Length: 205
Image (tube, rainbow, N blue to C red; front, side):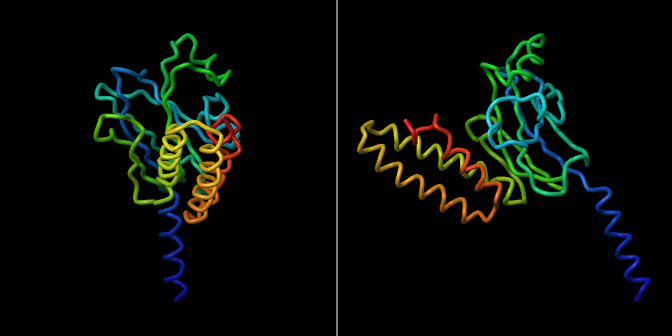
């Protein structure tokens, strides 16, 4: 019995020691720079923008636009990560990442951990970072929230009036909060909270 337990423990440690993440996808090189960055979000107030201190890794997309991040350096717990590319000129990229400002950038936020395999293929209409594929449902939670946010923006743009805004405020606050609870993922709820508390979004204009 002891031998069996020891063997199981050894196999478990062996698997964990070789656990690797793999985040891969495509960028449209006809429109975007070949450099692709992986970042970790440590502050929910810095979900948007590019911050040098958040960047974990950089890779170059190949001739087809394919990129891949792989390794075993990420945390075993779930965290919010970001993959982005931008069109800042090479000489200005370091400054842009330091100041968190780049006029042209494209990003996707997702939940992941050290053992996840997540893909970011082109969508059916050749848009990048709009589709996320993973066996882990948590990985696609933030993309689902973003889809709801897009529906919300459309509802607000249908007719601009104080009455319309007040009605939509009540509806979408509840819709987003209820959806966050249904996901049963604190990081997704934090993501929704960050959006609802952002004074620049449609809820506050």
